[in-house]
Length: 188
Image (cartoon, rainbow, N blue to C red; front, side):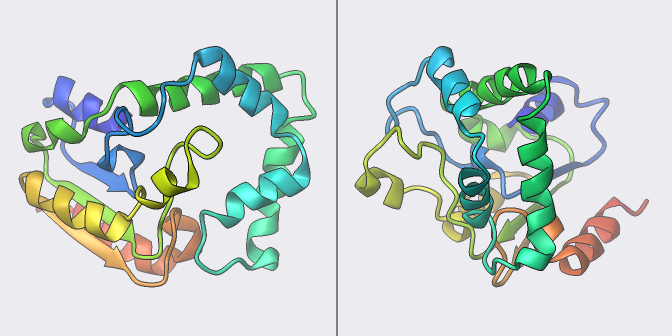
């Protein structure tokens, strides 16, 4: 979402735009009750248990492999043990607030730079766990459909669909992710 805003506001500084399973593919304002910044901060401050953090990461990948992904859980868990954690939690809460209150979906047709949109076809990530009902959440986060619709609306968009990949393809399928990325960024 921030990258879309940057590309829109500074088109002379953005030669290319790369979007990877962006949560900005849908507008949550009409489905998720707007949480306060305080609630978002509290939620971040309370997610300090390693099992909670692991469950969070497990929702992001199609095929959980502890030998590959446990390292990321441990790094995130270590952050909670530092004096910097309240600042980290505040930054995360501000990002969540942006996701809820500053949608960019309706601005896609205004994106100027060539855009690479990478979508993991197994991604069903949606903002709002614990903020909306399971029925509402089940209707959100269909990244294959959202990605195809967004690609139609973004001028000069190249859509890359990665099968059996979740929300973080750069970690889950690095070779499949890096090849189209590097090809896209090559000077023409």
